[in-house]
Image (tube, rainbow, N blue to C red; front, side, top):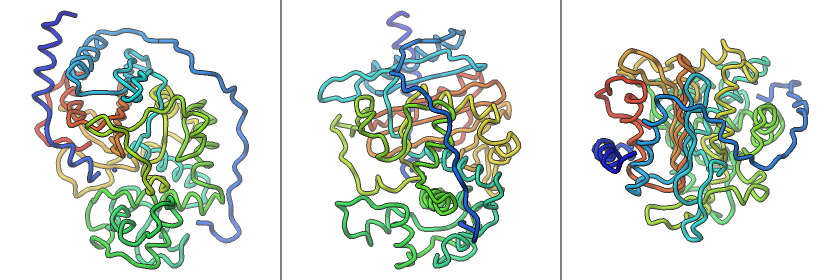
Length: 399
């Protein structure tokens, strides 16, 4: 690749940097007598990561490489990337540092906090319980938590961000006193029951992206299964799929410490632990690009949930949203110029920026994990139409 080509691509893509990152900051039943028994899965041998590229280059490989090389050379990207096309990995590469202080380099095996990309694992957990007949999408939260002070909040409204509930990050800051100890999902529910923070609007009035919704969904999973949310996801999703280097919250964090990339601020300083790290469902999944590729492939297989169940989750659930953007159950939805639907989610939390997009039409995906806050991360939104050889939409992107 020539220096001219690098500069040319850098100039094009950096022109697309927009302050839409701010939008992303806003985005981040134990029925009586019934319980679920989680059967132990087959033991998967804990191998060390094997650096086998297994890449099948395509005509899109150079396009992807030129884009990420350009923004990395301009110090606008620090992270790992994996791109697939027609079920084949066409690109996988790491850029920058896992730890800026020690200059430890990132590898394709580095583990990142997924932030809001975690929501799709929460949604699938709910779908699993739904398929088992243990919950219905129309069940009210009060069926699981009788003292919950908000009426008319169904699982479906939580999944599609139509509950109108307040953001837990604000009321926890006000009502949770001992911030030296991590608050849990149960603790968050207790705060809502005790203090009844004001709802933003009535249920099902409109779409409003709110992390509280997915924290409550994780709490429901715990209530129905009688195990922790982290244990449920590990036993029902990670282990069956061989996602051996994925975990939730602090589970296995010591075991994988050598692989975890530190989250950094825009000044390359590590971001400290936060008491809200204890709340899961809206965030909290740690994973790497290799494991997320396994997750992506598994969604096509019907191994976790039926194809019909997944299809329902991929339908636009907000009829009042105008334009080419919508939200299903745990996935955002957008349409290319030719009306091809893409299912994706982005995330931001304490120095981690993440993005995971899948296109079932041609079995392609773009997985991006970054461990540094930077304002150019959303330049990916200008790259996607080029990847699919389509004209960019005029709407402002929402990660």
